[in-house]
Length: 122
Image (cartoon, rainbow, N blue to C red; front, side, top):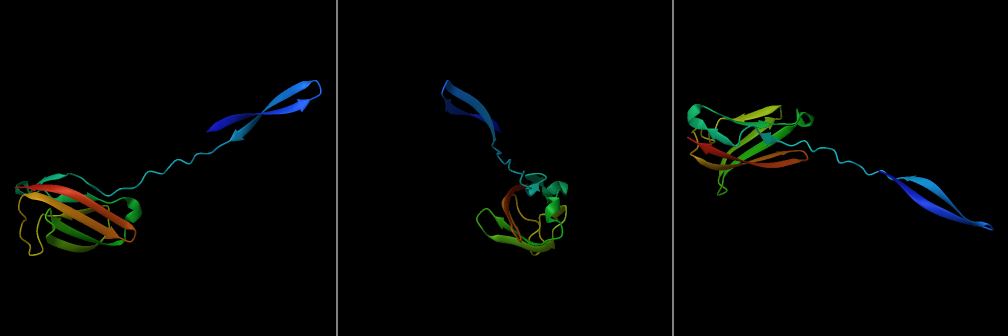
Protein backbone atom coordinates (compact mmCIF):
# COMPACT_ATOMS: atom_id res chain seq x y z
CA UNK A 1 0.00 0.00 0.00
CA UNK A 2 1.34 3.45 -0.90
CA UNK A 3 -0.08 6.53 0.78
CA UNK A 4 0.68 10.27 0.48
CA UNK A 5 0.64 12.56 3.49
CA UNK A 6 0.49 16.36 3.27
CA UNK A 7 2.80 18.44 5.39
CA UNK A 8 2.72 22.25 5.52
CA UNK A 9 5.41 24.77 6.35
CA UNK A 10 4.58 28.36 7.26
CA UNK A 11 6.59 31.02 5.35
CA UNK A 12 6.45 34.88 5.51
CA UNK A 13 4.67 34.99 2.14
CA UNK A 14 2.14 32.26 2.86
CA UNK A 15 1.93 28.54 3.44
CA UNK A 16 3.98 26.13 1.40
CA UNK A 17 2.62 22.58 0.99
CA UNK A 18 4.72 19.56 0.17
CA UNK A 19 3.75 15.95 -0.43
CA UNK A 20 5.93 13.54 1.45
CA UNK A 21 5.42 9.94 0.32
CA UNK A 22 5.05 7.45 3.11
CA UNK A 23 5.29 3.78 2.31
CA UNK A 24 3.10 1.49 4.35
CA UNK A 25 3.66 -2.23 3.85
CA UNK A 26 0.83 -4.57 4.69
CA UNK A 27 2.01 -8.19 4.88
CA UNK A 28 0.05 -10.71 2.86
CA UNK A 29 -0.55 -13.93 4.77
CA UNK A 30 0.91 -17.00 3.14
CA UNK A 31 -1.52 -19.73 2.15
CA UNK A 32 -1.79 -22.40 4.80
CA UNK A 33 -0.91 -25.88 3.62
CA UNK A 34 -3.83 -28.04 4.63
CA UNK A 35 -4.25 -31.75 4.98
CA UNK A 36 -7.26 -32.71 2.88
CA UNK A 37 -9.30 -35.74 1.90
CA UNK A 38 -9.46 -36.64 -1.79
CA UNK A 39 -13.12 -37.55 -1.27
CA UNK A 40 -15.44 -37.06 1.69
CA UNK A 41 -17.74 -39.89 0.58
CA UNK A 42 -16.20 -43.34 0.18
CA UNK A 43 -18.00 -46.48 -1.00
CA UNK A 44 -16.33 -49.56 0.53
CA UNK A 45 -18.41 -51.96 -1.60
CA UNK A 46 -16.58 -50.54 -4.65
CA UNK A 47 -13.21 -51.12 -2.93
CA UNK A 48 -12.66 -47.37 -2.59
CA UNK A 49 -10.24 -46.13 0.05
CA UNK A 50 -10.06 -43.01 2.16
CA UNK A 51 -7.13 -41.02 0.76
CA UNK A 52 -5.61 -38.23 2.81
CA UNK A 53 -3.43 -35.75 0.90
CA UNK A 54 -0.45 -34.42 2.84
CA UNK A 55 1.28 -31.13 1.88
CA UNK A 56 4.92 -31.50 0.84
CA UNK A 57 6.27 -29.51 3.78
CA UNK A 58 5.15 -32.33 6.13
CA UNK A 59 6.71 -35.24 4.19
CA UNK A 60 8.82 -37.52 6.36
CA UNK A 61 7.40 -36.48 9.73
CA UNK A 62 6.42 -39.21 12.16
CA UNK A 63 2.70 -38.99 12.64
CA UNK A 64 -0.27 -40.68 14.25
CA UNK A 65 -3.75 -41.10 12.89
CA UNK A 66 -6.78 -41.99 14.96
CA UNK A 67 -10.10 -42.91 13.40
CA UNK A 68 -13.24 -42.56 15.49
CA UNK A 69 -16.94 -43.14 15.00
CA UNK A 70 -19.04 -40.00 15.22
CA UNK A 71 -19.89 -41.10 18.79
CA UNK A 72 -16.21 -40.99 19.75
CA UNK A 73 -15.41 -44.73 19.79
CA UNK A 74 -11.85 -45.44 18.61
CA UNK A 75 -11.94 -47.58 15.46
CA UNK A 76 -8.28 -47.66 14.45
CA UNK A 77 -4.94 -46.10 15.38
CA UNK A 78 -2.03 -45.89 12.96
CA UNK A 79 1.56 -44.72 13.43
CA UNK A 80 2.97 -43.63 10.09
CA UNK A 81 5.62 -41.57 8.36
CA UNK A 82 3.83 -38.80 6.50
CA UNK A 83 4.02 -39.00 2.72
CA UNK A 84 2.14 -37.36 -0.14
CA UNK A 85 -0.89 -39.51 0.52
CA UNK A 86 -2.10 -41.82 3.27
CA UNK A 87 -4.70 -44.49 2.62
CA UNK A 88 -7.21 -46.05 4.98
CA UNK A 89 -8.95 -49.10 3.59
CA UNK A 90 -11.98 -48.75 5.85
CA UNK A 91 -10.99 -51.45 8.31
CA UNK A 92 -10.94 -51.34 12.09
CA UNK A 93 -8.03 -52.42 14.29
CA UNK A 94 -9.15 -56.08 13.93
CA UNK A 95 -9.05 -55.89 10.12
CA UNK A 96 -12.83 -55.96 9.62
CA UNK A 97 -14.59 -53.46 7.36
CA UNK A 98 -16.35 -50.70 9.27
CA UNK A 99 -20.05 -50.04 8.85
CA UNK A 100 -21.67 -47.21 6.98
CA UNK A 101 -21.59 -43.91 8.82
CA UNK A 102 -19.64 -40.77 9.61
CA UNK A 103 -16.05 -41.17 10.80
CA UNK A 104 -13.68 -38.63 12.31
CA UNK A 105 -10.00 -38.78 11.32
CA UNK A 106 -7.56 -37.09 13.69
CA UNK A 107 -3.99 -36.50 12.49
CA UNK A 108 -1.09 -35.34 14.65
CA UNK A 109 2.59 -34.85 13.82
CA UNK A 110 4.84 -32.24 15.45
CA UNK A 111 2.90 -28.95 15.09
CA UNK A 112 0.17 -30.45 12.87
CA UNK A 113 -3.23 -31.11 14.39
CA UNK A 114 -5.94 -31.78 11.85
CA UNK A 115 -9.43 -33.24 12.12
CA UNK A 116 -11.25 -34.50 9.03
CA UNK A 117 -14.68 -36.05 8.51
CA UNK A 118 -15.53 -38.79 6.04
CA UNK A 119 -18.76 -40.62 5.20
CA UNK A 120 -18.45 -44.35 4.58
CA UNK A 121 -21.14 -46.20 2.63
CA UNK A 122 -21.40 -49.83 1.63
